[in-house]
Amino acid sequence: MTGATRGIGHAIAVRFAKEGASIAFCGRSRSDAMVAVEQELNALGVTAKGYVCDVADYQAAQDFVKQVVADFGRVDILVNNAGITDDSAVKRMSEEQFDRVMRTNVRSVFCMTKAVQPHLWRQGHGAIVNIGSVVGIAGNYNQANYAASKAAIIGFSKSCAKEFAARNIRVNVVAPGFVETEMTADIPRELMDTWCSRIPMKRPGTVDEVAQACLFLASDMCPYITSVVLPVCGGMEDA
Ligand code: NAP
Image 1 (cartoon, helix red, strand yellow):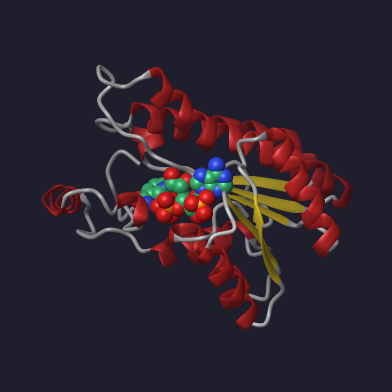
Image 2 (cartoon, rainbow, N blue to C red; image 1 turned 135 degrees about the vertical axis):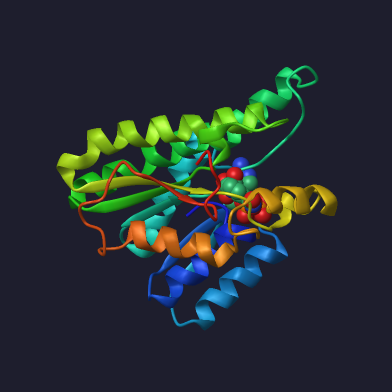
């Protein structure tokens, strides 16, 4: 899986490990966080290893998956979680800001899917879970680049779902609403309170609630579910 050094990705890795899954995950550097996650997952009794990979780099993604297959023997599930924001209103948004978000959020999903698909295809079995966002469905102020990237993930995922279904490879999207992580840490408390007041469940989601949805879609509990977008957002209206 991509981007498990913190936040939602970390929670997904821990949830999957608790079910006994071996975990290969990546971040952009061999940080203290990566080493700590590796140790935490190994302590749960599973094999886990962190890899350095910028997942939007095509060759790096190919090398990452090649090494994972060499180390683990196979890949059954891909979770494309790595993502960034770089917010501003469209009238102030630079070309670089737009490109950076599209590269990390969309190109990464293409690169990782290309790297993993041949292995899943050969096995005739597999699941891909891509992390979208309700913002990709509804849009959001100051997040046109991010919303475009998450909407693109939905189109890409649904296309892959059609192409891969005959090989028993399912492709689904989990679309979180507002979840408190480092990504949302800089949002002023007042604004967070305003957002939460508009959520029917009146609170942000937790990383574990997103991880549970990913586990369901990746597991054999839903062998006939593909091409869905599952919002995990406390009932936010547009989702
Ligand atoms: P986060 O705390 O900022 O974590 C992002 C993770 O992605 C980190 O582990 C980071 O690892 C990794 N990453 C970023 N760019 C990467 C790259 N180019 N190559 C490899 N790894 C990379 O974010 P989060 O809040 O957990 O969000 C996780 C996913 O959920 C994202 O796709 C985000 O868009 C989505 N989401 C979040 C929310 C929310 O409210 N938090 C809502 C909807 C959707 P390193 O820093 O170690 O490289």
